[in-house]
Structures are given as C-alpha cells and as structure tokens.
Length: 187
Image 1 (cartoon, one colour):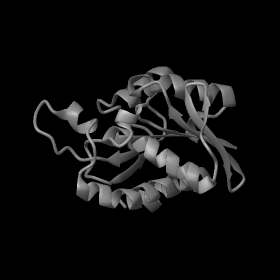
Image 2 (cartoon, rainbow, N blue to C red):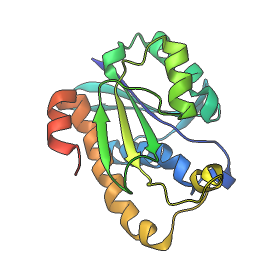
Image 3 (cartoon, rainbow, N blue to C red):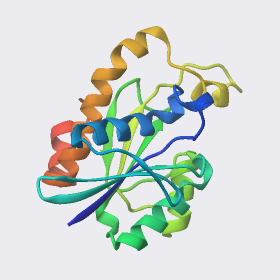
Image 4 (cartoon, rainbow, N blue to C red):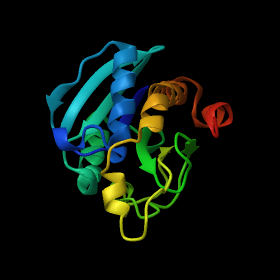
C-alpha cells in the first residue's frame, strides 16, 4: 500500500512562514516524525518513508500554489497511487484558526491549489485536510492576508496544531479516512 501526502505551499524563503504555506509545515512535521529527509525531485521536494508497513511519500510541490496539480498528478502516476490514497493538506479561510477538517471530497472553495489539483485529476473527489487560518482581513486584502505571516497568538499555538495535523495524516494512512474523520475533525 502506497500513500501520497501533499502539503500545499509556495516555494521560496519569502513565503516560508506565511499562512498559505501551512501545508508545507505539516508535511515537514510528518517527515520529521518518520525520520525521513526531503530530497529534491521532480516537481518539488519529496520524502519517502514507512508508517506501520505502508509506504508514504510526502511531497512539497515547487510549482507554486496555482500549479500544484501538476506535481500531484505526476507522483500519483509515477508511483501508481490510487486517488483514495492521496491526501492534500491546505489552508482554509472559511475555518477558524487551527480548525482541522478532513473531507473525502469537496469544491475548491476558491483555493488555487485545490483548483489545480481538481483540474489535473479531473475530479473533486479526493481526500483533503484543511487547516483553518480564519478570515481576519478587510475587504480586498485577502491576498495580503494569506501571504502574510502569522500573528503572535497564532504562532504560539502553531506547534501544537501542526502536531495534531501530522497525527491526523498518519491516522489517514493507517486507520483510513472514515476513522480519521471521526477521531480528528473539529479537534
């Protein structure tokens, strides 16, 4: 059994600590937990490890957010990973800060990374793990907000939230999406 966990974000130091890059942060925590390094590869940085007998590929695409689907499609095809064994980790403005929401399918809700994945896979029916970043911005300031850095109070809570999301991803690999949704959604 193979799994592909994809943390969405933008490459480059200027984006490293932004809200939009929370997918990268969760992916890094998973790799750290499995004690596997990221290596430069096709379409991004890839870490390969095992979790309870299952092969896990952890990907941080280097395509920028709006072309993330290219990386997902490439690795799914190269490794012959079925749609139900991929998990896309992304930020979500519609959820309060730190809220965890795992879903089997859904719309892109205006998120360019999810839009790209859906276009490349020709379906919206793929597992995604959404990390709430809230929507504390004034009209017309959405881009500045998602590409902005975390507030002090958020930074203090981030390590615990990233840890929780990492555990949810590994639960997805071992226990399946249904059990993981029951055990982690809203927590």
